[in-house]
Length: 266
Ligand SMILES: [Zn+2]
Figure 1 (cartoon, helix red, strand yellow):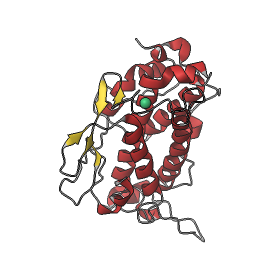
Figure 2 (tube, helix red, strand yellow; figure 1 turned 135 degrees about the vertical axis):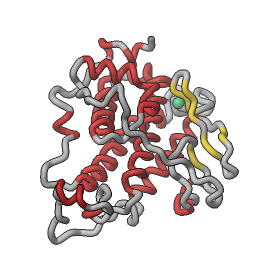
Figure 3 (cartoon, protein in one colour; figure 1 turned 135 degrees about the horizontal axis):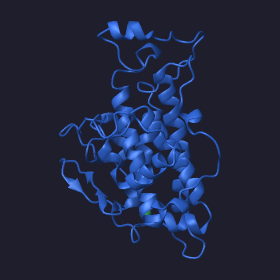
Figure 4 (tube, rainbow, N blue to C red; figure 1 turned 180 degrees about the vertical axis):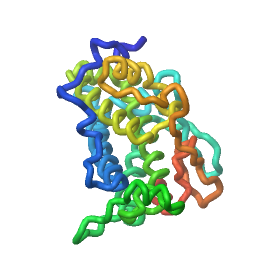
């Protein structure tokens, strides 16, 4: 078993209950809260990725480079991209990760998906009874998010998880040598806590990191949910094949809209 799945290396840089960081404040609408979380989680992940993307002083190249990581792997798992014809292709991990970062940033800055209009008054909080009675309700509706918001958030989360999985499986030693493994754990446990609380990840997405997640559940760092062992919500969208010339990650990043094509063409 890799060292990073062992209890003695699974600690954090902060003490306390991670749920206080994940739990939605009462008066904030869930869509608003998830949008906030995506921005924050992306910021934390980018900080961790920077550790392997910056040029090493002795070698003059980043830790994660085309030679060290010729594919986007996480131990036994390899993630493939899809080419313009919808075929899976292998990309070096640094390229894959760069594409993900560009893609997530593009989504966050997309006004149609993450509207940033200033409110003079806060949007109304939907009441649970109203939500139940309204067949047209969807997550984030009252805050002005589009209907696809929830599935887009799930896709972003799934791809971000792949980046964490790659960091752990391929580059954990670098974090350990720098004394940064607890910082990595702290960012990742917060990421997982939010992902689990709002069911943004499927069981299969979590698989490469499951031993660490299970360990944290066992230690009570992450809460255990009743439905676990049963059906956990899973993103179901698949790449929209044949929709223009978009290149995207396989297994459903929902990247078929032409708006993202330009950002990915490098
Ligand atoms: Zn790498």
